[in-house]
Image 1 (cartoon, one colour):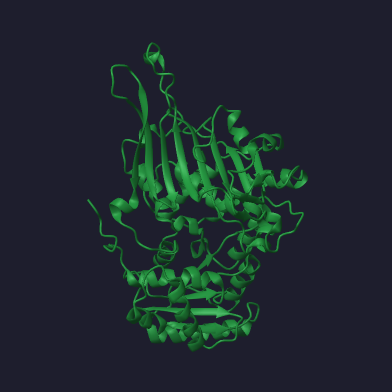
Image 2 (cartoon, rainbow, N blue to C red):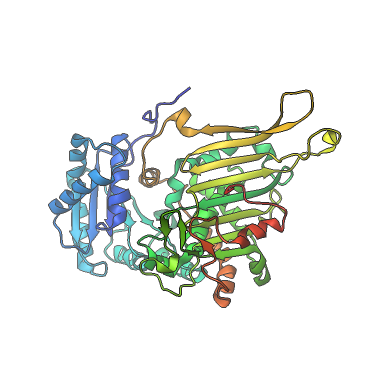
Length: 505
């Protein structure tokens, strides 16, 4: 059976205006505008919608429309329908101004009044902060001072991009500053990773299939591995990466979201706070490491140059805007535990890095090995444990490995791989990964957005690792070749537990 991917049962988002701060940047043209166009194409964007770009560049609304019209043809994920784009572009406006200029926010207020009158947005508005993190709190404060967060005549929401802080203290400070202006229900801390269809499907897979949930615990599962591998280097983001590194960039958000969705208890409903309550419980059950644990249960790496045939890959220290003596990590591996009844003593191994051999995000659940007693007097040498792998990207699907008897007069076992790919059953819908998140914000559904306690708890787990790594500079960087599976220490960390990584062979 195949499903028509265009058969949507969701209602259009609420009538609203969207304001993008930093509207002249890459995120707007590469992700946000194509995502909004896809929502319009799927009938999920309200007819009473308007878009206002806000940036420093001196432009008029007609110039901004022309700019986006040129860019959508380059970055759209599907063929652009000229009539639909014409309808969309008529709803695009622009306000030029500095982020710290109160007068610019008064001009924005006037423009919002115009679009409400002309397009019927009903006073509803959400602001997308597609800016450098240093502007998050000042922008929210300016919105508050201008009266642009008052919900007297409709709802008001703010989407805040990552990174949400650099460590526990800065995340706490940022939360405190924005909550001086906003209520928690108005704050949508975005992690675009959760816009991916298969990440959302983790909950559906776990909680809609009765054969898996009964064995989803320490009694049957030996360990869980999460791999987020990228083939690219830092590209043009060297300046940002020098201040962030892989630990900050990936773990408190992407990685911990995947862990919490994989390990959480069944929520009693799909209500946003009910789901996030269960995720928060998992994060709070991850004990921060003692300093001595950091030395044995964490690995950091930095890629060096390599040559594969005629292809030469530069090392991290030779990338644009990177220090030639940089100590920034481009790879991390962690061994974590969740101290609750379901997961006690089950290790969660995590690795993520740049310049690895293939692009792959997967969650591998390895079950405990079956008893060998029955096979002692057969040709079977050992039993291979079953493994369930959720493939999140680039080829979304699920695979299950198990043993089966090889035909013949003797008892021999061969490994069998059962594979399911979403595209074969449900087709594919081209997307940027932002469609679901923007749509949910328009509906007021915060399920896939991080709550303040989740952010703060995640940083509290990362904090001891940051402290030890800051105090003890890496002994050897670079310590893995570009195009390899990372430093040997990551393999050794699992080998000490008589285990190995599930992919990368």
